[in-house]
Every structure is written in structure tokens, then in C-alpha cells.
Image (tube, rainbow, N blue to C red; front, top):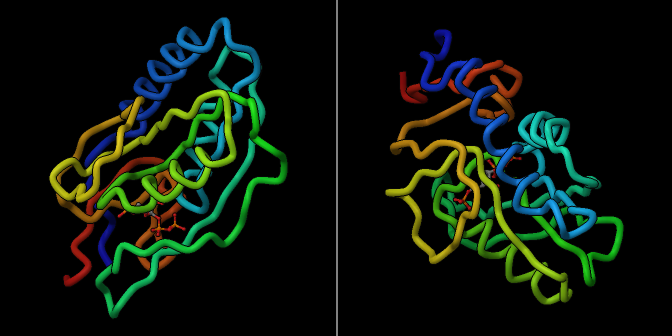
Length: 175
Ligand code: PRP
């Protein structure tokens, strides 16, 4: 497959991550430790860069989920594959996603984590496919809104390829 065309450059990502980190640091300046919950696999690079730019006390947890698929079509049902290791009860939680597409994954995560009685839950996604989102889900911190293109890089893959590209690229899977 050809080299993915650049949708969002490395420099644009870096600048936006800095802005998000500054905003999050400001918003949580007086709340104590923030628990960043990165959603594997896609969020690992974004989480690494975002967390290192925060100026507030923070700790890192991970969750992994999997979508049920019928052929190449997602059913919207989500299954937990890996949970956080520590209790989030009474903690301030920020869910960190690489992308919100239909929104089903984030809806599932918010509902599940909310039931554990954290002090607060907010959400952060590097990318949001606004026109594809099917469920009501609030994204408190969005990096970039994008169209309905296939995107890879900076943690996102196509069939496990191109996750480590330093930029967000567009591909045509049918090409
Ligand atoms: C991606 C992404 C989100 C989810 C968003 O994960 O990381 O978790 O899809 O899709 P939705 O809004 O339609 O629910 P993916 O299933 O590709 O797994 P990966 O992160 O392990 O690559």
C-alpha cells in the first residue's frame, strides 16, 4: 500500500497536544491527582505525549476494549478486554482516546466507569469523526474534528499497520 497522505502533520499534532495539556492542567489545577485512563491500543502514543506535557499531579491507567464486528461492520456492542488496575472511586478520571467514531466505545466506557463512583469523569479524544457519531457522548477535550476518512498513524492502525507513523495519514483501504 502507498505511503499515507498527510491529513494532520507531526507539527500540528505537537502544537495541539501542547494546547490540550495546557487547558487540562488549568482545569484540574486545584483538584489533586488526575487519573488518565488510556484506551488501548490506539491511545498509547497520544497518552504518552499528553501526559508528559501536563503540569499537574497525574497517574496512568489503561483499559482495552474490543468491538463486536459482523464482517467489516461494527455492531456497536463493546466488550471489556482489560480493566484498570486500581480503584477509581473518589478519583478525578480523564478517559483518553485516539479517536471517537460512532461513539459506542466511549459511551460504554463512561457508563462503566461512572458506576464506580469517581469524583468526576471527563473525556479527551485526539480525533472526532463528528458526522459518524451515532450516540450521545460528550467529548470535553477534542484535538481535531475530521471527516469520514480512514486514518492511520500516531497510534491508529489499519489492520495493525501504520500505528507508528508520526503523523495522521489518510488511506484508501480499497486501493
Ligand atoms: C478505535 C479507537 C476507539 C474506537 C472508537 O479502536 O481507539 O477505541 O475505535 O470507535 P467508536 O467510536 O466507533 O466506538 P479500535 O477498535 O480500532 O482498536 P485499537 O485502538 O486497538 O486499534
